[in-house]
Length: 356
Image 1: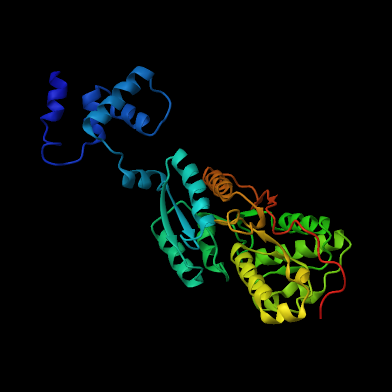
Image 2 (image 1 turned 135 degrees about the vertical axis):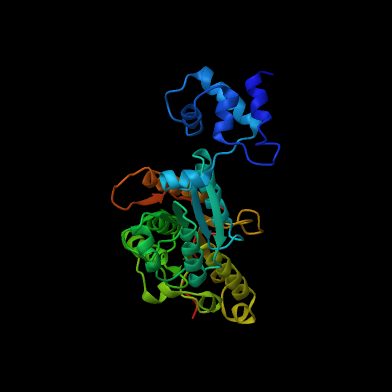
């Protein structure tokens, strides 16, 4: 070992338990401090041979870049925040995987939290992450206003909403194509002869509004009536033996599962067996969003699906483009959807008059 290397190891920087510094790396590699800085920060101007010597010294010493110093120099922390609605929601987890993949490729660390769809918890988490100087946020929004973020976004915290539209104008979002999903579902049901098609929309929200608008547009395009009563169906209505529709489009995974339970209860009810022809108990179902076991249960469910990992990756790309200085107007990226036919919608309605 050279006298130079011995001097570094004998300096007490390691032996005293202190962390190795860039000066130690420079001394061990036999280069200027600025050269080490260029290698650490991936700047040009260093020959491959010199860079290799610096990286070898970094590895030998166990040097780690001082992120606090980098923050003071650049104003950036290389951290992103991700706020999920729930870690039990497969879509939220898949979106996170997409964002994390993009973040890892670009050297960003992630803070994570979940809200259980509680807007107060979302606000607390988002502002807590901003207080810790994250460079950007990806949020699966809870219901309610997101005005609390306006000042943070104005201050430079890049923010992208995913899966559901936020209640905040002028922000970036990456969403599944809700209107396209509704058009695909209605066209599929109409192609199998259904004319009385209902919409199970659940609580009001921006995405549900887009799905309902898509439903109305698709019904009109197919030349079908869209009775207002058919656009406000819920589990109680679906369980009613007097259900006036032969098919339904459900605006979310939980709504699809609730509809299936209600329709099963309806088919098994004594009133249905006494008063209703057997054929009328079978209602065609198309759901928005795939879910676990949708294709494996006894009656597999037809869905209009989207790729949540792709949504997360696109959100990460958009976020990092903003951090790189892109000043384009706010973007809405709609990820394509596709219909997966599994059997719950691929049959014609019963013939004859509806039961009363």
